Length: 251
Image (cartoon, rainbow, N blue to C red; front, side, top):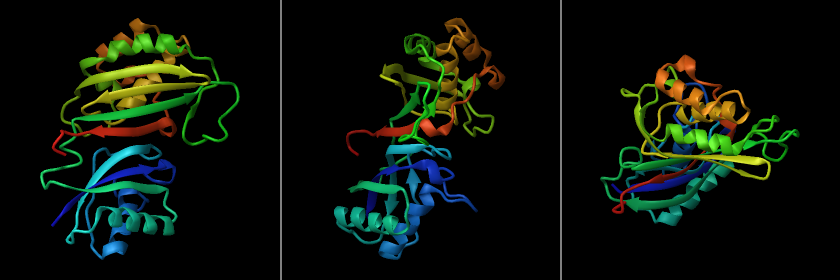
């Protein structure tokens, strides 16, 4: 039974998140149904990251086991055809046979997210639903300097959802960069794994710094508090993208 790695892109606006849910559309369900229509198999798809409702992806990864050893391009094209017929805003960028030991979630060694803020008086028109509109001028340089406080290994209780199911709030944040390109501020975050709502929570708190409401010391105190109540505003899901997942060379 061959195992296929699927590289996936999607617009999360129409979905209640990645994970299959009882009465709401999900990315996982849409792909599983497209696979069933393609080859007649009911499958269970495992994704690298359980993105929330409204969160997008350009580099999500999942794996699925199929009975037949279909050609890679056949799997990609056939699943895409059924997704298109269902008017899903999802695309399979690639399908590749991988070793049986590959697990899209547990084999991952790094995950990369991008958060985009349009920082101008005029709202977004073309990117509406895929960017956070903040009309008040933000100091991206101050946000970048403050972000350094969060780098490294910390207890991120302040920056995780109260519904987070992780056993341990300690994570190692490898990258948190803030940069401005014209009217767009980009926040890039990388770690082996993230807590539920961690990226959006960090971005919302950095926004407080950028608008002058918080200092670097305030952000450091929020981290040290280990208290969800100390977190700044949680950024909306619109601007968040899962842009890549790392795996060992054998995969």
